[in-house]
Image (cartoon, rainbow, N blue to C red; front, top):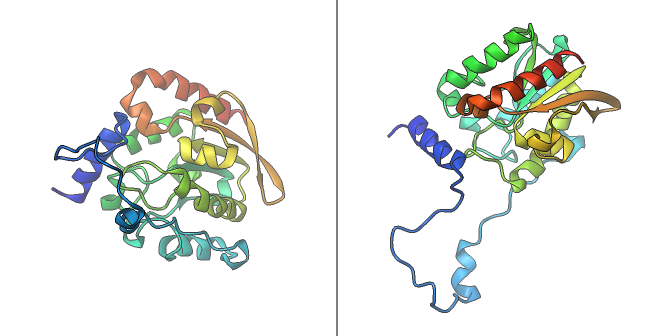
Length: 234
């Protein structure tokens, strides 16, 4: 099975709500709990810490190269996808992570989800060439979801990225960037224009549903359209 097929299968189970792995073999749940020495070897390693702000590159070009290569950033460098588009537009869109198909195509939001994203932009008279598109996480976790431990070190990196991109308005797509910048789930952050401090500037921001969810749930299209209209009016 190809990497893309494996990631797609994991995405399906994640979207279906499966968040716990089950053993193939039966387990004796009444057995005594293992001792500390028996479990010491399976304790997961701590998430990598983000570098201090003073150590981050101070030009957009250097910072993007840093995001694609630095070992302190979650996710292997071979699976990271770069930001794309035009910062001069003043329109910055942040998605949570690359899609499963993006690794093969080498660009954000490819495949059917990307085609829907393009139509969403077209509906408010925008295109990929006239926005700056940022992945909150440059690499896609194998689970297809970002945990709080992964969101925390990525948040200051997004803020630095935004400071260098100098947006005039922000569209946040998906829970991870919304949680990072607004401290709310996307579902609760919708229908309100928020203010995000970028450097010393207050930037208006709208939170919305990620196109991958809209692609799966046609009944969400009216909600996404309302969010896009609100964003267009900023």
